[in-house]
Length: 265
Image 1 (cartoon, rainbow, N blue to C red):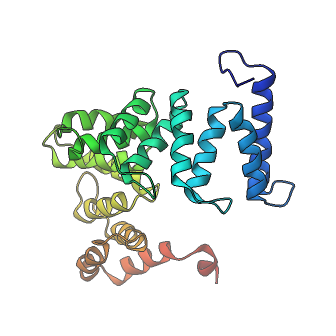
Image 2 (tube, rainbow, N blue to C red):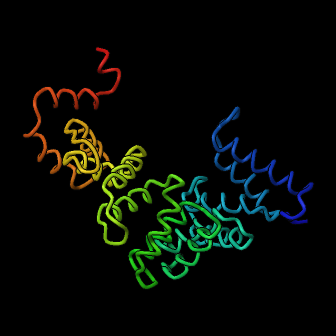
Image 3 (cartoon, rainbow, N blue to C red):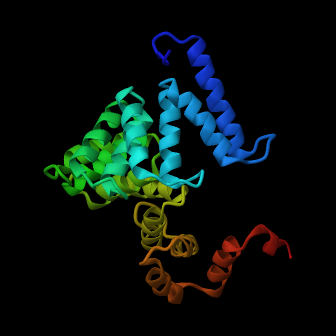
């Protein structure tokens, strides 16, 4: 007997119970952490055709969480879960095709199709991914207006990369009417989720007083956080604004960057 999502019953309960046991063993909740035991229970659920279990197993084979990394096996599990209509698997399948892996050839056309399918189901990360491919013209003609629509949908659902991309559109003003206040608000939303470009772009706008008050200490903080996240332009941004800051402003910024324990001493 296989899992039938249209008629949940005994097999559904067994599959969900197996998934729960898998998660318990994976994180070590009340039992010793044991990735291999977790994989065993994921396989029990997957064998019944339970799509979430197949998707979880696929991610396990991609990351090697139980010691065996097998992208080809992951591909098979993701395809099965996606064909069953499991939207997160559609997105993960798109990621696998987008970057390729050992035994899995890069296929941008398939990646775009997977992202688009998941995006139509309202999956936020897929909406951003589909938008980015359309924005860059990857496997399809570039269409920034379509990309804008995707970015809007993902940004309102809190995807930081989409918030940064949408903010860039409002900052540039070539596809939508330029609106610096909106751009700054969106960069701020992305920055608060530690998105490196969002932190850098917010620092730029804050240092110039674009879309809101000029605030050099705040800009210093965001440049510093962007640099810590590996943003290539952040060090130059710091070097540019530091000479314009007073000692009090520098001290204010540095105090914000210090961990609470250091401030208490």
